[in-house]
Structures are given as structure tokens and as C-alpha cells.
Image 1 (cartoon, rainbow, N blue to C red):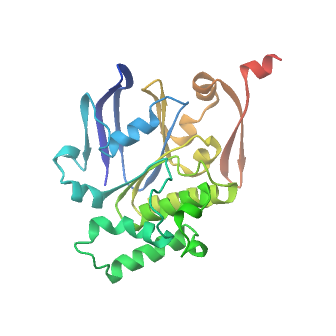
Image 2: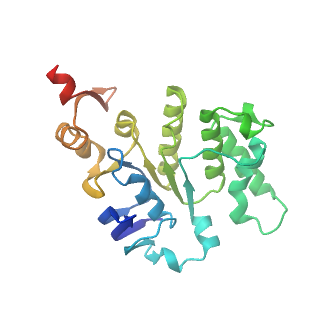
Image 3: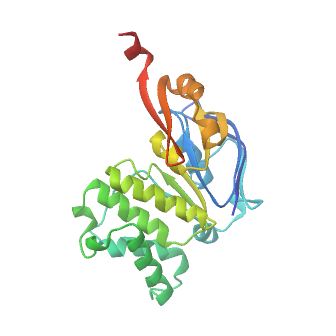
Length: 260
């Protein structure tokens, strides 16, 4: 499923947060939303999920406007993974992951298909050793992986993830990015907000660069993560290279540091 954002404007507390955003997000690609703090990345993701009021414009899924979809139908088509990993109830890990099947369950009975989806999500995110534990007893990184498993258990065609690797150690950052890339390769539409530019370069096939609520660059990853864009938007100088045929980038210094 593809998502289209048309002429999106969002104002919060009198401040323009998103200004005339137009974009199409096709299936089969891992798409990264990048940009400095306050660029509007998380707000745009919430707009795409139908969770943020917009002052102008609209969002469509396969040409059908978001507001015309029944909420239960939208929940089956799209999963939104928020930044927060808080859980307000002392639920077990597997019960939290089962919540991802809620749009598909018409009664209190959990079917075989639902259980298989939950088991597969738990396996994919590498949290089998956490089964039986209360989610409130887990570390922030462990909770983040549980919430990702819940999102994957839904089995939706669209996955929107807001900084899903921010609290993870390097090993699990790599594993989660590889998992998201694999989900996209299977035909899903996967859009992720990222600050880790080195992982965006390695795993994302397409990037949108935002700054001050505007889209300033969009396209193939190597065409967006350029020396000039990093210096102009982030104010950093970066090192670039290639390892085993895969390009890499490392933000190295800012203008203040270089002047010392």
C-alpha cells in the first residue's frame, strides 16, 4: 500500500510545524524521515497515521483519503509505533504483544492465526527470553523491542515507527534496522524516523530530509545524505566511505569544533 501526503500544513500553538509537505511513500522500501531536532519528523509521521490534526491538505492510502476510512479498517492497514515505551499496566510481555492483534479479533477468543503472528513477532525481535516477565520490569531498550513486536504482530501493510532504535544497544539497533528493511523487502510500506544517519545510510533505500517544517531533500539515500546537505542542514562535516560495497557516513565535526 502506498501513502500520499498532499499539501500538508500543521500549526501548533500558533507555530507552523509543517509547511506544504507533498510526498508519496511507495511499498517495498524502507523510507527514512531525517532532519535536526524540531524539523517536524514526528509530527509528519503522526499526520500519516491520522493522529495529528492538520490545518490544510490530506493524506491518502492507495488513493482513499484517511478520514474516509473506518478506524478498525485503518488499524488493520496501518500500525504506528510511538517513541514512548511506557506501559501503564503490569502486563506480561506476551500479553502486550498480543495487543497488536486487537484489530483482527472479533471476540475475546484468540485464534491460531493470532497466536502464530504473536510468536513470530516475538521471535523476529529477539525477546523470547523475556516471555513471562512483566513489561514494567524491563529496561527501556527491552520495552522498545516489546513494543516493536506488538507492532509487527498486527501484520499490517504499513508500519510507521518513530525513532524505534533510540534506546537500543548497537547490536539491537542493527538487528531492528535489518528487520525493518526485511519487512519492506516483503512488500510493506515502512517509514521510520531516524537520527542515526549511519544506519539510515546503510539500511534505508529512500530518505526525506526535513528542516524547519519543510521538505528540503528527497530521493535515494546516497542522493540525500551528501556532504553539502549535512553541512547545510545539520551544520556538520562528515566522512564518507564504502565497505563491502555498502556506502557509509560518519558525522565527524561541527564548525565550532573545527575553529578551535
